[in-house]
Amino acid sequence: MKKQFLISALSALVLATPAFADKLSLKELSGYMTEMKTAEASFTQINDDGSISTGTISIKRPGKARFEYNPPAQAQVLISAGTIAIYDLKLNTPPELYALNRTPLKLILARNVDFETDDMVTGHSFDGTATTVRAQDPSNPDLGWIDLVFTANPIELRQWVVTDDAGSETTIILGGLETGLDLSNKLFTIETLTGD
Image 1 (cartoon, rainbow, N blue to C red):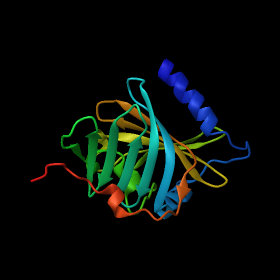
Image 2: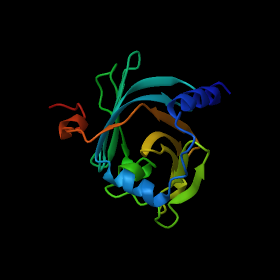
Image 3: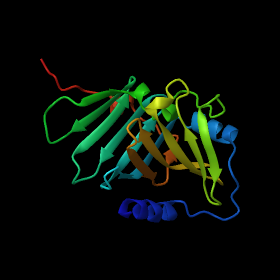
């Protein structure tokens, strides 16, 4: 209940837009995502257990993202070369590695995003303020899904909720996205810390 209240309160702040917005089409949203090559924003993350952390996300499509967490969290997540690396910065150990194509995040980091692909979108709704698209990998629907929330005038990605194959939810609420940045590939380089 506490988690749902926090999500509702944060979403209300983030999604405050004029009432004249209309439901965005899948074609419009596909074009927006495909054209967004680089982006950066502050974020608030709400985990399945209700814990909350904040930080900054950098995105370089296709296939790259970096989550820098603010203290007291001591974590970093890098996505590059088809791999998700989760670092615990308290420990000088290699990161936990996962395949990007085994998570719904791969859908928004793809080179071309096409929400009109058969069986990708399983939900497309409008609440009077924001358009929500529920998408899954048509080839692997058992891996979970992602709910993407967009506002209009101009179109902007405001949050997403990843539901994994176990039913756990992770919510990312974005501050204003700054796009068109020159982000070095070095920001997304995954170091395994194995040394010599």
